[in-house]
Length: 496
Image 1 (cartoon, helix red, strand yellow):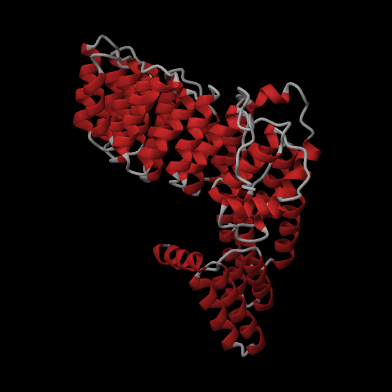
Image 2 (cartoon, rainbow, N blue to C red):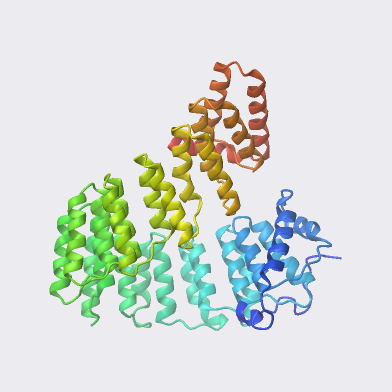
């Protein structure tokens, strides 16, 4: 019997994930247990075909829900074989379950991302039979085709959408234009627009998409020309239009043109918004024009534009990078007073600045305030703290922080393991360094070549031959598990 043969009706889906969740409330504990089981099965060995996934899942007895399916698909978003095999296994074996449109869209996107276009189109056809294809679905298809350089296929997809029940209207046209522009093909977007503008009327969004595409491509003359076309079509340039131009001038560090464009938009009755000001201020800060960046803040306040959390975060970053930690903390207090609650980026920026300036107590107090405000830390919260501990040989604090991360279910990534191995190695803590190297390999990471050679050199210098042999064997194991990963690690280290 063909285990992949579809059962009658097994591919019929619901309109959305919520359609199923309205019937049965999500039991998070049960979902998590089933997720852990499936994750273990799908990662226990390298599955190279959909058939192998079916065999791995054979006999697995679980209660499937749209929430669980989508969680697994997101987990294996970079492993199309496991994701697609699981998706088909659910549809084929779970007779009481029907995939929802959200799950189909996720699977379509995963296949497109992995350039499995035949399987992707097969899935879209299945969705079409059940009337589940939406503009969101086709947006994913066109985006993945464009991302793979298959521009003609993306445009041809647009011309075919009427066959699957969608309209070739302004909204659909804008989706394709946006896709082409985001994939750095503004010229193709323009050519397509000229081709269809007589039959599909543009709107203000159409022109803003094209202007943004030209700005991203640093083709500012074309952006200005499109802006004139926008006016001739009786659409008024808005804050989105001008902000696209300002962002492009900022990328070129042409701050004279930035100021001129700000004056131009104000004279045309268009006030800059908080996004506009954030872009300008952040660009000035990156260009080390700290005082000019702070003047933008004063200008913004004079214009009556209210800062948001993203603006404050950018301002804190500029002040912290310039060594003005006290002023950065003052902005942090202002956020509370003005009703813009700090988020994880706020705390991460402040903690990093405190660590750079060796203000250990301030960094730890910020971590505590973060917990008190119910703001969940992430790996970027702890990385500067761990780096500080390695640099200052604060081993006891280092292990306390690692234990705290474990309690909060924060996994250590390759970059953090590298930081720990190299930092401890530099400070002569070779046994601890070897321990983290071993954990890195056992977690499936491929150590960078520089990290490996640094550790070997220090072990050899200290005549720790037994430990050196263990590290050599661990590296050989890592390379054997994933030889392509070793090449990637070498390349990443070289480009640093």
